[in-house]
Length: 251
Image (cartoon, rainbow, N blue to C red; front, side, top):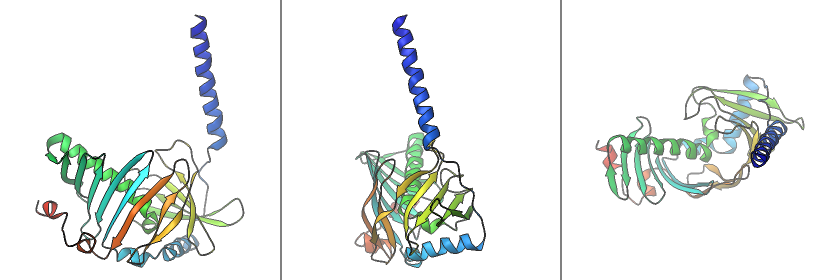
């Protein structure tokens, strides 16, 4: 009974400690003002990262690393296809719009429910990883709203909220920028993180061959790294003339 009491006290102590830490760290969603000023701020941020060059980027590849994981994406932006590979066993071709595709495990095609589950997982990976690659381009997507927020130091930031789209609608992101409107940090209010206002840096900017700019490192709750990032005007230029998605296109 004494050991049970000690264990119970220990558990209660952990819960109280976690609750106190949550209260100290958690930030409520800040209120901002919508309108032309917020939209202008977001557009300047897009200009700083060369939005037009991003729109002219027809294909891109990158590897995503975080939480000890590593996965690799080849994205045909023109046809809305993606190849997602992870765990050295899985290689999935996904029609992004239809959420359908072809899944392979250890080189063998997987069909039925298991195959569809792998396709759905690959789609969710693409949603997350491509968003980290360039969410700035999505600041005016359908279902978004923008509000201008006054920061603690008196400067301004822009909150981009998503009421639809992606895998977790309802998320919101507060962008903090430098004097040239190039992002330096963002704060997150997202469903997958129980604490509001978690901050990540935006750094190690890379300019693709098309002229688009993307950040490849984010220091925060965990380190998020993007590596082997390459972008070209079209897929064949990136893959040396091979249409990786020919099998998917034929379906």
